Length: 183
Image (cartoon, rainbow, N blue to C red; front, side, top):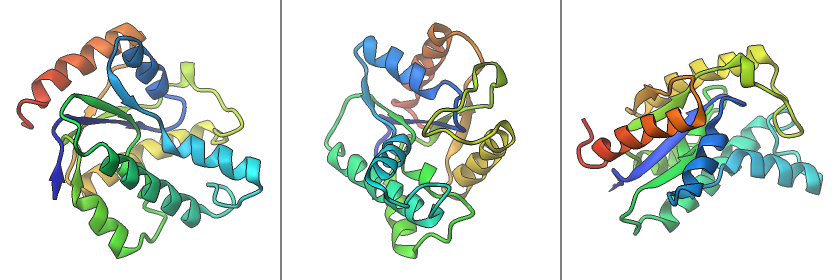
């Protein structure tokens, strides 16, 4: 098992401010890892592929999980703080019957046990080419994410709805404490 207390995951439904905060932290010199899900959707759409949430949900989930496993492994030597815009767990949608080998691989790669969860925030929610979910689906995603964290024994930390600067201060304070002690 690889346990990385210095690896912090941002998760939540679409359009809740994860990427805005990642960009802000990157601008402050933090090590960040780009989201896999939007990249997979963009690549599939551009290449005429079907591994998208609306065409072949299972293939999409598997592709995202495999790619996130590779990202985790590529950074496993990293000793500094790393923030992930989504992570391995985001691919384990409960509507997908994930292969046991992928579940085992995810269980063997552990981020910090505290995962930053961004709740639905209607005022900032927007759709686009990769984010097609309506508001109801965005809200439902939040519940699925919390259930997935529990399944893999992670503890959610709800990120408050606030300015990017206030969210950054919240995350950095907790990350500083959590990378020293997982409790």
